[in-house]
Length: 245
Image (cartoon, rainbow, N blue to C red; front, side):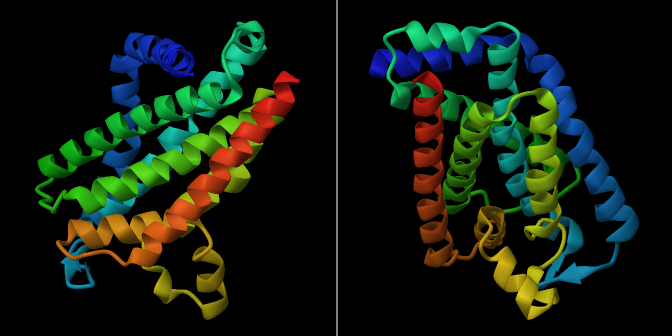
């Protein structure tokens, strides 16, 4: 199993290395626009929870990036399935389903981690100084693990790139804007807050933002991320097992 997941992970890293310069540019565009538009143009002089809006926004962007970039591994899997037929080779190779899932999930986490570092560098250039401690990185990695696992699972279910785009439109994009990235969810009605507290990004954003302000996040956020993460990995394992049967 160890040899299996390393082979899957190494393949994804070779692809990532070849595209890294272009990906870094792509990872920089959206956060840069958010920082300029929301941080300066709209959020200038606005304070939330005793911090400037730019300080409030940056941890939310980090949380959102851990979601979007980890989930983006699903697109790589679809390309391998639909065009290169790499998944067919994995089906015949002596690699266990758990090893395949683990390799792809770790690739998604790596992709998210690199993109997150790009955002932190951009934040530093904008003069945002936060506390980047272990609590922050733990929440970041846990959130990345969740969405990389979901990406693997959905990649086994979709039948085309159009289906993948629908998943992004109906799941990822709404969560990105409503999961506490751009505004505190306690400003919403109670019924909306109850729904949003079921989303992993809400807890990741809360934990990352709290820790970046130098405080200790609530243990409930990490427990929720752990539960969802285990469920997401099992979901990915089951869909891969079904696809390889």
